[in-house]
Length: 309
Image (cartoon, rainbow, N blue to C red; front, side, top):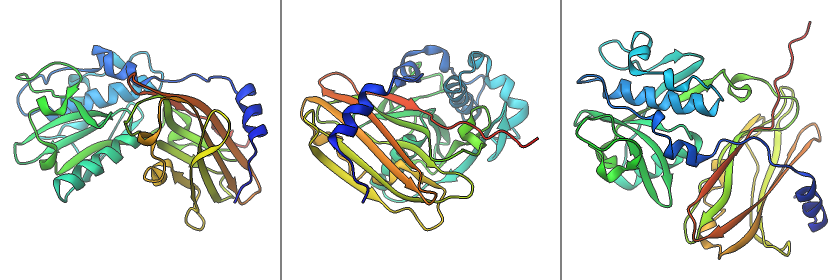
């Protein structure tokens, strides 16, 4: 087990500064991400365009609003949305989903934890597709491209499909517009990790993002702690990634870290990881629990390795 001290936590909190972050509220409130389908039968295409606009925004692409259904059509539409395609450096892939209604909802919530840009959820029985945007405070939200529904982000209960009937989904599987999409890293790095700035009292929170190590190394151990204001450990979880693993998903410990049990107050989110080269990564952030809405922050720490001359 990696040993940690309260003194180290206090020191790190003093020296760490807030890095540039994409706020979840931006994706929820900005109407430029959303649109209605241009014609019948293009719900999948319209939903994919919305998903890619949101991904481009997170990449820092100021031209995200120019990514439209019409522009995407020549790349991704062949009498239906292609199961695999690449558009402006963003690769989209298709996956299947099955099981009970509860199992499907759990799977979709887990996917959203890894994909803040959202996923395209498809109900083959209708048939119709929507963009699932987020799972916040125990509720799914979406944008439905059907013209008979509301505009923009709304609870999925108002959409044209039911999640219990979702059988497939499209998601951004790779993104070469940001370093963590395909680039190697030098040492341990956090790749699009998201964590709370505020958690609404009594609500859960799904961690997301990846930890990656250098090409010649492997991840040995990861620990997550939630600390009280006095530095005492309230929650603790540890993982031993598979032998030889170079990547590890924060989603693996979501069942062990339960934000919903925390009372109102100020807490510390603490991560420490170790790789086979003896490297250690420590990530520390304060967050609050209150009656306000849950607010999410995103973080990338890696830098791409420059190619040899």
